[in-house]
Image (tube, one colour):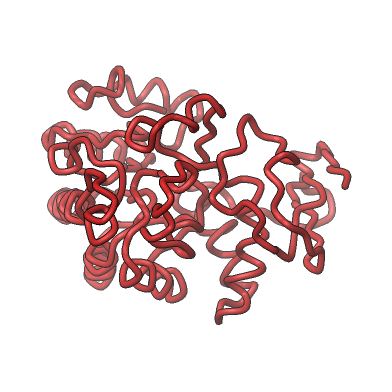
Length: 301
């Protein structure tokens, strides 16, 4: 649920009523809770209610009108950039508030080396700070924007190779707890606008599993670690029970064909849009079906 009314970052929603309805997390989604006093109170109230704040870490004044990472490629292309400190400054703010209040906070879609370093520092101090990372920040860099393809425009933006490597190392060692998609579908009309006008965001649901099986398991991550990042860590963060495969339990399963090989074809996607940065990638491993709360939804070929 939204953390503040209208996602304006100024006035908290009625958290207690929303938690009673079953909500475990609050976030202003694509916007940070920019008012630090409001962020502090939101973390404290969520903590008292057994919920957690999920922060889109960004200083909007520093990000301004940027469309990609501020660096070599933004200079080459003449595109306004978003500096890495726009993210890391907000990460530091969240960590300081977490330390001061004892409350928990979850940092969404981490993309920079500096953010990783601060999150690792927070975990070493046993602060209640968790974080996530997306496949595009683990596999791509700012150079992918060189042809002004808006399918590589997302927020936070693709960063430099040193950032990608830092995120990968942190994902592998558990500093970044969760593997997420930041799934953001947009229409063809929206995404075919000029680069600096087109909206941020890429779709990730259809490719997340194949990317993980193809690129993560071959680079030192065990299947057990991957399952922890996808299944168990998110549930622990949200204070949800871990799924069980036992007689009489309600089935919550994903059926995976780990050896399936295929080329990413956006025209075959089931979701609203086709704006993937992984078009034509050769992948291995795909979901064949889902059983959710005992209800089977089987996907065909």
